[in-house]
Length: 341
Length: 172
Image (cartoon, rainbow over all chains, first blue to last red; front, side, top):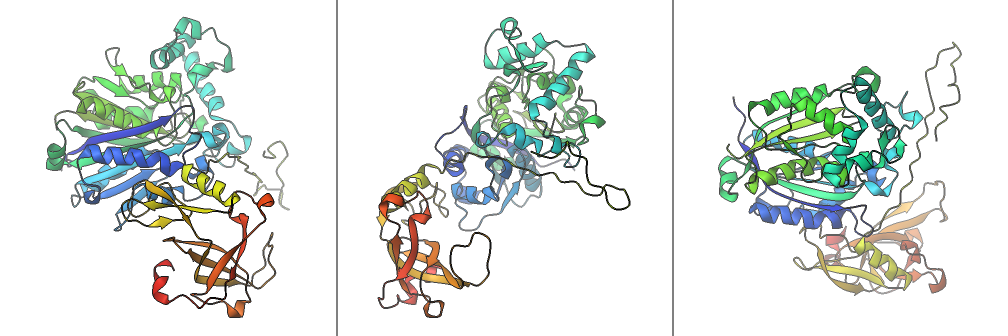
């Protein structure tokens, strides 16, 4: 049985770079959810399912997703779910939920205030709790190990890292590569700018999507794959989970106009491009990606939203959206979005 | 920081079955626009809420959005520091950092002019405390008021007749 036709029909986001000094999570989220719902043309009360992605470690308090419901107005009671992951994975849950066929639309949102704590230390808590986490390696240290392994493979250089930074966040690659290391072989421009933010997407099925949106971004394929948690048990220079997810989502079945890849580090974009088989002709991360603004829990959903926007506004016919989670690209979610259902 | 540099303790048979891996994370949290206004208010002895433009309910403290309507809160409203005890518990269990002598009362108070209830200490003999009891805030002196609910020391009975059930049944 082929999956039900589901499309992204609207998207809104708010990125606070380098951080939001005043508003709390609800105050960041509310205008974003309101805008995405308004753009969808579907009355909020008629949305069949609501699901969010966030992480309590970012704000250092439990059940923050419950407080965030103030931004939705869960009365009369709504069907609601949550993933302790990036909102892109919440979108995947919504896609699965819509496959059941009894509801036709879903609101997906994400929020993350990554600047409230020391992100490097927070992310150390996602590692193996016995052998790795007690050593408190931060995300840049682990990414640097991955980058070093990639350089040792011999096909890319530090200038290639700088070229990714120059393309997505400005600057001159030849100049950037002269700058000092933060953690060798990575420099400041190789790590995404930690930010706060919120994003929301509305999904609709079949005829409803066609009714509310002139050019819905149809999800033609979507797949999520996970690799070993222990970094020593996988080849960090390749993303086999991305390659498999991309294959299952059907990335190679046609030309790709634009790809929004969730690469928190420059070298990870190179790994992802290779895993997805994206050639030189593919426009990658025109939004600036997670390098320009990296609000955790939001950056993945933003990739889906940004890719969908390109379909909706008519500037692309086929797009790839990607989200990652875990240390050094451990988990990967890939979707193919198309103008034609 | 963890004690990763220290060798793990071995059990009597020489095996390692446990490790200590303490976690400490520091955060700088923003109260948010709405709650910040409220917290500034309490240092000045005022209880500030906000009214939802859709359902007209007044929330004290105000929130980033109306929890039933999912819209931003509207006009700022100052409510009274008197209210009605809607429900309560008598605390008999000692715990670390306790400042009150056992037994004491902790309750939910619907402030006059507010459509929600907030919780605080109730200074009254436990056997006399009852639902519907009228209360007023006892403020900490202005010079030592913190930007927190501790700006109010506790609520004390006003001695007025009890409020009728219908006036607070929504706030349990």
